[in-house]
Image 1 (cartoon, rainbow, N blue to C red):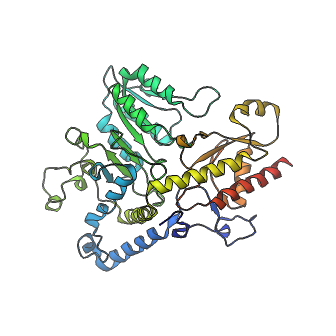
Image 2: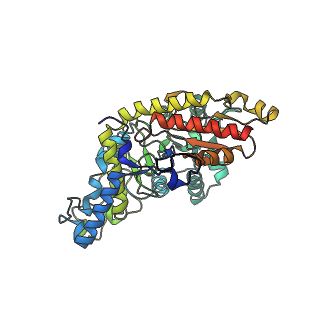
Length: 438
């Protein structure tokens, strides 16, 4: 089936979100916030209701083959694993549906971050997502290291907003002998920059470093080939582009090359061989591959929501056609925004902020489509302008994501957004800024 599958999702109406300035109150809003929380898919809604029914009519027996829909809870994630593997470009044994993003990140760092007196640094982008920053610092502290020395952050060049690939590779080459772990976001949450995963991974491993990735903003957004790129490990959440619901169950990847040398350090019964799991043996026998890192049995309601959303991805053809449509939507939105009388190039930001009080914005996401996903980050110039622009957009039913003090993120997700959504966003932003300029 061709994308988009807008009818597969429940998008709030203007009335439901309080968009009082929009003339059509019972029409769905312009939802460009799937990079923060994806909307509810009707398939997810259906599967959750079915699992509630199974719970109510089968009780504990729903774990096994009496499940009314043939999805016994003991094996539930077996329905998710192949879809995960297809999305991230891996083998099924390399992925697991488990836990939450930061918990999985800690599990991976406990296994793969092994600092020595000579090789102890964690290389990442400056201003990584705060949860990642906290994890890096706490892992360093757990090893008796000072995060100020152990965590090496790369910042964009002065006057720039995205990192240059050559600067990342030069840092890896220069500092490689002291770096234990290279870990970046697949897509940077603030700027929307898509990092060159393959080249960074290759460069890191050439220097003897482990290379892992936080794919929270990349999975379901851009094509991935983790196995072929030889990525050591990766983690991701599922409530953004994967539309699995707030705080939903997460995912984890470990390359098969580690299956005999990096066994789970913190064992749990759900990571035990399923053949003997319910025999309750005293000795842990891990499942081969990433699923051996599982600890507790997964939340079935969260897993059902994820499965429903992944089925929609499968119906859309996965990341091939979705990426093609994503490029169209994001390029269209960028073009429309650049036609605004309030748009200025990034090179003019400093001069504009010093010389003009007129509202203005720029786009800090890379202009090269190969260096971004579905997100455009708009930087507003002027104290308090972003918040006023965000409130104005919300009043017209355009839902983006505010990042204080001055950025609004707009993400036309290809599964459910349309060209009309892009047009509405650009039109109402112009109207809002007109009102603020007068």
